[in-house]
Image (cartoon, rainbow, N blue to C red; front, side, top):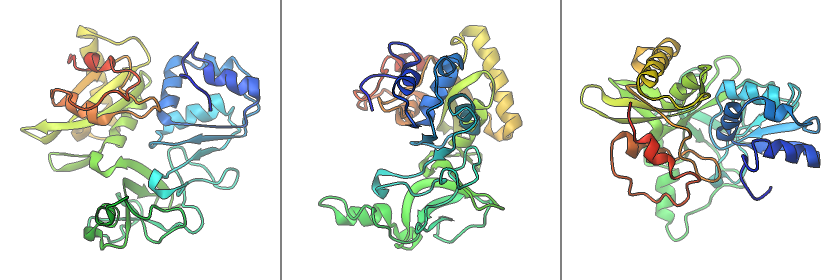
Length: 322
């Protein structure tokens, strides 16, 4: 751990630390990895990263393209990536590949640790078949789990063991799907990040992954906003690998990206609006502040606290529609 930002004094800050101190384990967030991609392959390639043994990713689902870049450019194609799913409330890793043991699949956190009984259920708490998306739950207690909320045990029970799921399943708040053949888990994002467009349920992570799969895109965040015709509309905030486009060029690239999403997922998933920025609003730990993006998409005045943002100035830029 160190004090400072990953891009100061230049974009090689992380790689210089690995090189200088012969770091063997590197653990970061997908948001940071996508920033590395935007900055360019030459920064990690300019340092000796051969001391690395294990790479880790945490904080949000990692899209396959970022996973592959991380594996090839930081791990040299030899380091296993430990894609860890866990929460503060779980007290430790819950679903994760074991390095050197579990066969890896880009974008999947693979299988629960021994003793962790994870499952995917529908809105009534019943298991769904592999290959079908649903709500991620934990079925049995585990040693490090959250036990209560200080001074409010009733809120603890309602929040984490809701009656709608039978009162005995730990609700993680994430949507997930299991592979039909391997049973591997893939996290699709928060269940409150699911959009309902003309009766179709779309995961924001799914649309974000499709956008980032485009060679032009470094990073993307998708939110919903109310729409009179479709109920909800898809609004995408996109950071390109090139300079932020404006005017006619911005409209042309936005059309290309809409068509790309339509081809990757389907016409229903095409973003109704795409806004370009030099960056996305993030906390100092690298988490994208989607609640702020929702306010911007709805053209609401931002009243939330922005003191934890690393880059509050980016909000004004993102308010500018094409």
